[in-house]
Image (cartoon, rainbow, N blue to C red):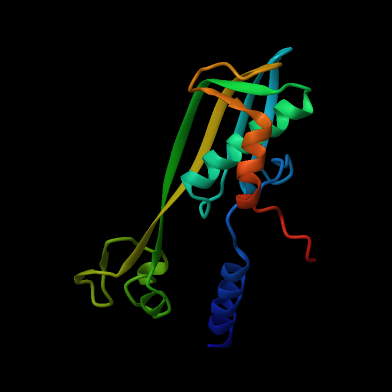
Length: 181
């Protein structure tokens, strides 16, 4: 019973530490953590991407993408950027886990004949029974934009953004990684 309690306590502890992807560069060591990345295509054209983890909303991913595009524009010495091609992808996975009550039974629905079964399973005496199952949908969003950058006044185009204005308006909603260690 003690090992089962330890697993539950450890799982709850990890869940408490899990948060949405903060505004950070994507790490080659931990790409599943998410973050931003960019690739220069021409002198004034870039592809910018922001990937979130399963706790990061679509709105947050798209807002961080706009913020990174504006930051990159200013870093490159430009005043405005235009979103030439922008899209957001949703990747959904399904994870199923047996009810822990049934998983622990020696000879219960989930351990019959030494293996786990999902959905219909053979019961202890060989009868068919519907074993409980917990199915979770896990979605991750990735937003991508190709931008062109320019100097001077922003063009009168709904896809053009003044970089300094974007930074000014969005910076209060940007969550950076925690520095507490």
